Image (tube, rainbow, N blue to C red; front, top):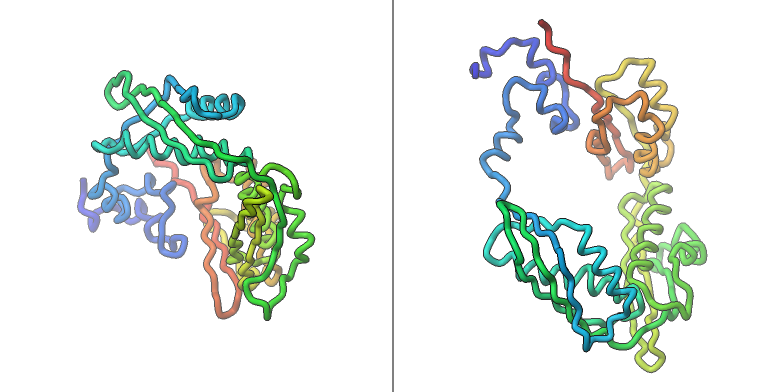
Length: 311
């Protein structure tokens, strides 16, 4: 390979152009005639070896009271996933703990078993190079089922009331009083809250869920404390790699400078403009830089493509 100082200037055009806030997208690294510094660092620190674990058999302790539909859900989830733990000596134990915590406890906590405990044991049945087939033995103590109690949405700072009505926010959590408590539905509700605030420019809004169990009534009360932070507006929007006509077309689906920064527009942008965007661009090619003093964001779309090689 030629020294970098001897490479033709034309071949280095991508390296000479301004990158998205100093970082060339991975998508464009293949265009360069030499490795980027980021590539060299990654090569110096190779990823640890991994195994691919396929769960081919799931066994449940017959003495446990795990509902049949939960068993089916857990078995299906484990069967369709390929786990990729690091190939160290402890991976079997670590993976067993992960299975007990996520697929097993998750399925049961979504059915009201709020205080379920679970354990899993992994047994290797076969291995072929990096692929491993395994059986999983699952045991669990579901405990009593709990139902949804009160749900309240409050501001973390009493001096700054919520900019969106608590009643409206409450409706975004898909749980009603008396329903079986579901961690998944609470999580979905928190995502809905972040989405609604994100549309209003509150990109740093953080919801903090707190639960309180009423053992006598077997209910779980939920208080979501919202740290709203401040709203951001669009400062500027820049594009790399497109002409003026394309830029004008792309701008139609984005908020204008001075408007509230609706971050959901970035995801919609790729769907709306898929036919005119380079085929390999993604959300990773967008950089959003915040100016906390001005409360604005600078958005840069790096839509450059590799140049065609001359014969």
